[in-house]
Amino acid sequence: MSTVAMYGVEPYKEAKGEEYMGEPMRKHFVKLLTGWKHELMTSVDKSVDHTKEEAANIADPADRASQEEEFALELRKRDQEQKLIKKIDKTLQKIQDDEYGWCESCGIEIGVRRLEQSAVADLCFDCQEIAEKKRKTAGKG
Image 1 (cartoon, one colour):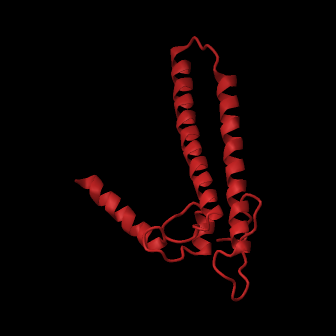
Image 2 (image 1 turned 135 degrees about the vertical axis):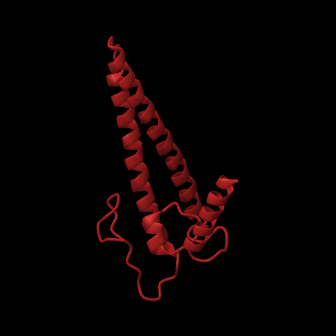
Image 3 (image 1 turned 90 degrees about the vertical axis):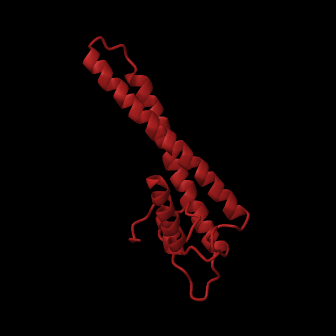
């Protein structure tokens, strides 16, 4: 991960001998996830406001069709953002329950860098690859 701050949070710098998912690390991910959630909620609010502002009666069929397509894309985006917000809430609960940071499949540490890339990850890199291969194979049947 680059040294650029994400959602106003600098990348985590582990102290030598620091316990994995100890208090400082958990606080870091709460801050990261909360910032991400806030950004998503702001985006959803802007999307709602934009849709309301643009929902004008347009007489031209081509213009109306374009606007309807734009609204459909906006609704899909908003739905994805809402699902992500729910996943962030679930992840924040896992942090609170001291269940965050370990692979749900094999139980090993997911790792700080992977979690900074995908803070809602619940599988280690290897298990994630296996799961994706299974999904691709299942989709071909």
